[in-house]
Image (tube, rainbow, N blue to C red; front, side, top):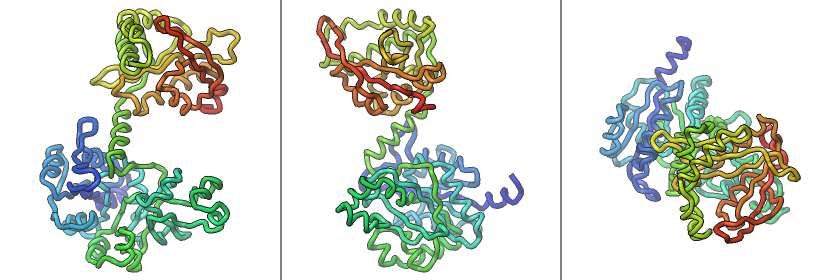
Length: 439
């Protein structure tokens, strides 16, 4: 890092406004995720940013203040009367050195990428005439274009904001006339989606501009759209908009929180190839998964006859075979929580080279992306072994068929299988060319 870079970094300070009260998800900043409050995840992401020298949490609540300080980080108790996050960070900014650059990182963004913050900060460091910058990202889902909860932004040719709105902007007039509605137009003309940008709510200010801006009265458009950044535009100032590719999730609802929790929990998981010593742990996952996931679906007699001891012997034998492979998902405090196994196809007349035998997860770790990761690891290993096609057999009554279809499996056949003398229909999913997916 050059002396100039060091000097500029010393003047860049992130402030995280952390108001305890929230309408849709009460006390959301204190909700625990993988053993620590949500606000600490956001703080740690900001601390990873290479061009920020200091991170301060600005809060109106003693609990948040104590949590931040007890974690060894910096926090300031601010007025409870502030109407916006910008007002709250301005209170702290007044105590900071002149010519500082202030980064407003939303407290409910625990997945925000340090790279996103870095790019917004660089916009101010590189363009001395720019007083404020923010970020946007491409929109990939039609429902986000139509949602009033997703703020859209349009920019001029130099990347400065023209307008922010909760409504879809720009509006494709001719396409809507042709197809009858915006939703139909977006579904029919796939390229239309590429013109939309989601405003992601990260702001970077020069300190003096921030202090001036927060003293301005609310403007008509700001009050109409309930978007405070419109105050800047209505007063003639410019906002540099930096497009980023790293998406984030703002936690406003319980659904948002669960999505974030699942992602962060999955990041704590280690994936590796299994060995013979894993046989016991894998057997426990196998038996518990069957008993809880298939209770009431398959005969109870079959589930009762599943034992860890029997399965351990089977896995010990298989893990010693040349053409058998397994990947496990492991968490330090819980051990192995899931696995997937596969081998070369033994069906000589079948048009697929390998069989994915199964994916098993402990029930509490299902629907968190772990199964998809194990699935992809197996397929990539097949490619490495010069195996380019695979199939998987599942019970017709399996609750996981939709997962296999989501992962690209096509129905290629049917059969049957007996469990405790009860005949069950089976379905066969096939992946004909793995190189098209991972090549």
